[in-house]
Amino acid sequence: MEPRYLIVNADDLGLCESVNEGILTAHEHGIVTSATLMVRRAAAVDASRHAASLPHLSVGLHLDLAEWEYVGGEWIETYRRCDLDSAAAIESECRAQLELFRSLVGRDPSHLDSHQHVHRSEPVATVAARLADELKVSLRGREVRFEGGFYGQDGKGSPYPDTIYPTALRALLDSLPPGWTELGCHPAAGSVPSSYDAERGLELETLCDPQVRAALAARQIELRSFLDLHEPGALVETAGETPQSA
Image (tube, rainbow, N blue to C red; front, side, top):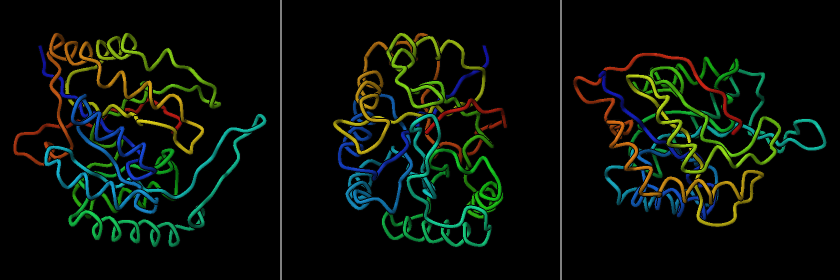
């Protein structure tokens, strides 16, 4: 049987204290191996301080350029940090966030992704790819297959908790192909100022469920982090993505 390696990455580190606590708990007592930091959020300093004490948690940069919520039958933009039609403005903001990451964490990010996957569309895609190439790190969905099926809402923001219970995650593990996969998640240990709120607590429970870790062992799926991609002999093949809403 060909080996299967799973990186479990928690998005939104730094968003708020409850998200920080949830991610760190899911790393120390669950299966989370990596996280991506939102450097412009209020809890980013606290997140960086705690992450520094966890040498096995790889920390990447969660490029935070804009956000949308589904309200009244349409997607409404709640904020943007730069002109998303201007490659120059996007590059300036991304590099500013990179420098802020370096000042907070004391090193370069181990990998890159983006809030609500804005790096999938141009002109963000080109800017993010260039930044990842310069840093020699993985960009979500490019070197490692991304799995977004562990997410508790549908494409319009309606609750869909069946996908984040332990039974669903164990079934998802059965479907993993050989090679490397990144599983996205969004745990939290309390209320979050986000339309994706109650689901985060359910994610945390599932990620820390002993039966999930037992399922990994039974299926001979090895947990890895983005730090492991830099080790000699790490073989990574580019594969397609699975859509995810946030």
